[in-house]
Amino acid sequence: MTTPASIHFREPDLELLATFEGRVVTFVTADGRLDQLGRRVNRLTKGALERAASSPAFAALGTAEALEMGFPAGMAADAVQVVKLGRKPRVADARAAGSAIARAKGTKPVLVLAGPIGNAAELAFGLALRAYAYGDMRSKPAEAQGDVTMMVAKPEEVAAEAGDQAAVCEGVFFARDLTSAPANVLGTLEFAAQLEAMEELGLEIDILDEAAMEKLGMRLLLAVGQGSASPSRVVVMRWNGGGGEAPLALVGKGVVFDTGGISLKPAQGMEEMTMDMGGAGVVSGVMRALALRKAKANVIGFVGLVENMPSHMATRPGDVVASAQGTTVEINNTDAEGRLVLADVLWYAQETYKPAAIVDLATLTGAAIVALGNEMAATYSNDDAFAADFLAAAKAEGEGAWRMPLAPGYDRMIKSSIADIKNSAGRPAGSITAAQFLQRFVKDGTPWIHLDIAGVAAIKTDSVLSPKGCTGWGVLSLDRMIRDRFEA
Image (cartoon, rainbow, N blue to C red; front, side):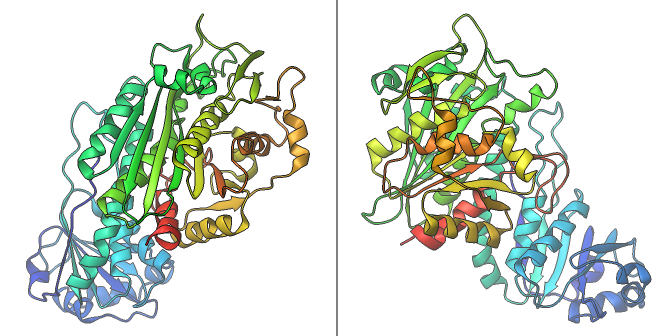
């Protein structure tokens, strides 16, 4: 998998500034104040840093934005990056400053003169998250990234705080790698094998094959994958880091490629459907992060892995299939397949493990993108307190999420004339009716959140903490919620 940048922490060393070869990053407050390390850079460059800090270009910068001083006289460095940042930045600003460093860093070693700046670990976290680049499909490996050294006032304390964040960063990268991988490389079996390899981290892994799913009555999930030569799988990842309490269940949609089946998608944009397993990628990333940081919580991740293809074996529009729960479903649109996968896995998770609460994630509907664009995940829940905890975690981590309505009136839209329910109600309220469908498979009294991440799993332009492409959205928020609500 893609390896996060190596970041080291050390005490300030004024003598190193003159001889360091690579890039040097210094910080200047909005009113032009320099700390001790900045004053040393200014002396070495014969006042060039002060001149830069008093320039119109610096004044025009926003918080956490930067300008560049190339090949500074008096220093061996190739460049000095000057970042506008206060001494006690907010978490979001510290991460944004780290992102600015990552975007400019290239492959040379980087020396970051953080000194007394607060939230230094968050700055390092932002740098690590933004330095991601998916390169597995290139014929030549990317040039190795230069190491990052941060001079901070209390390196041991910062390093300790950054340790758990490094685990979460690796979880984000794992989710991004999985979601970015093309379907001819990451099919259902390859995906399952990557998750099985996480046993070495302390996760307990079980894999259900098609025969096992048939015995369990998971015919909705099997109906999605029956048109493909790639066999369907369900992977269960258990992390037992808490006491005897019931676990949190995370359930992810893992459609490794979605043609739409017989309800075939248009050709334009279909290549993007390699990321239709984004929900499963996020669940996998969270489980990896929990194992790496030895979380004191009981969490079980479930991913339903299928490929939705048209063939003589494929499910037809109009077919009626019974779920593991027993509800019969008229499949009137084979491109509304993700909810079929989730329905059976949701029911299996509850019947087998009796979770305290459930979160499911899926790149489920284009309607979520129409409603919220690429800024927010559509969030549905049957429990106000649980929803509030998640939304607070998402806000704290800077991952956009917006609560959407659930109401009995929408149930009428998924009534079927020949079965208990149908899987698609068409375009109106498309994300809501999908959530209403899933709610049918959640037991009364079980707190549940459904996250439709269609708009946030992959983006077409850079964001603060992610380059364009697959984002791993949700790993940060779910890890934060687990810390705050479920850890012992």
